[in-house]
Amino acid sequence: MSTKILTPTVRRWIYGIAVAAAAVLTFYGVIPIEAAPLWLALVMALLNVPSDD
Picture (cartoon, one colour):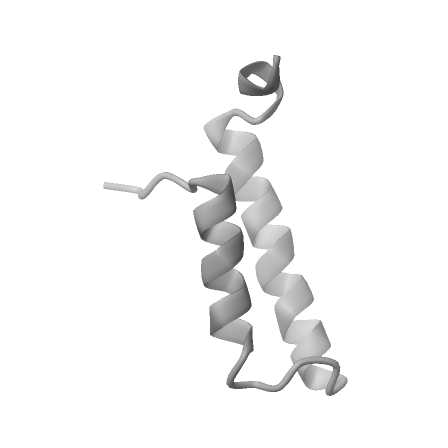
């Protein structure tokens, strides 16, 4: 069931939202700028975002 919902396109869309959210959270000081790439790497690993190769 989850394979039908979490298609590669949907996972890329979710990752795009996470990138924007990380930028906003960093801007408002919720997360330190040094932590943003770590959180995004975690989200990418969880979503298994395919590369554009």
